[in-house]
Image (cartoon, rainbow, N blue to C red; front, side):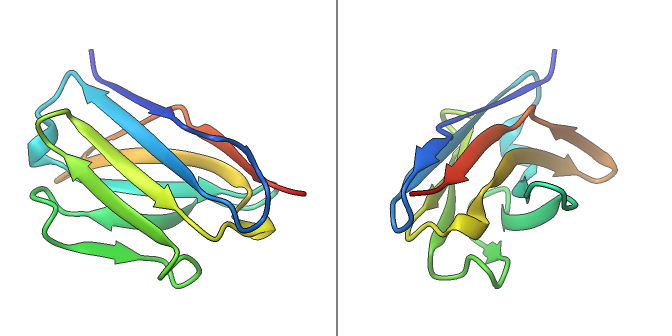
Length: 116
């Protein structure tokens, strides 16, 4: 069955870094655009970053540009989100998403908390 499993979340101090991973299985990973979303407490889910099938094109929300980097390893069926210079407002549940045409899959999310 299709699975997207996020990992790497946790508690980090402001200015710190975390690397999230999302391991995919049950579908042809390399044919899907991958995205990371986050959902801050009490707010709606928002797109954070996306990467095309080959990894050649990436895009970011303005709030994370210059601080976050999305990447993928199609040989390992995994997408990553490197998060640097973390701020308290980055606190959220982070989800990965796979999309191809009208088909999309979601992971269960991993919590990131930025606090001193």
